[in-house]
Length: 186
Image 1 (cartoon, rainbow, N blue to C red):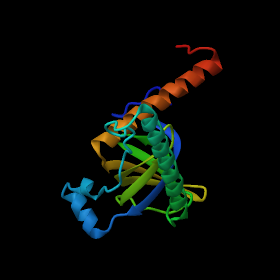
Image 2: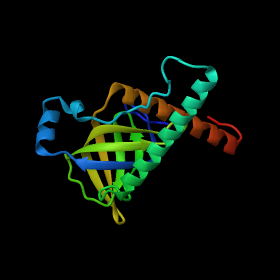
Image 3: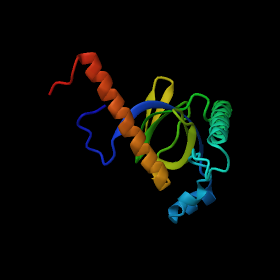
């Protein structure tokens, strides 16, 4: 974590599997017209609440357990699917904020390219988010490319989720550093 981060949004280093594709001409035109968010089709967040209770609390608990099991199976299937895609075999997001990301890939992506990205998150719940990003720079690193991109189309709920996730990761990193060093010194 960079203590002197002067960006609008804090960023964290982590590794997230990602499936991506370049937008076609018609999709690029929609983005240019400010309608790019209409291209986002994924069910971003799986609703963890089951709605109104219709049975006993035990029934609700069992139903909730089956829903969580189903969500985990969906996540596993999506992960397997992601790793079988040609552009996603070893592609990973290595740094992310609510406004941008860094992608490590075997593919050389030109600056200015627009990418539709599906990012898989794991944790207490499993979810997949979709966003559109524009590449800003590329850097050759060994046999891979490190692509820096700005997020240009993202749902407000997804942006809020990313912000919360980033702060949660930063708190975790600070606690880990404090524990390792016996306290944080100024």
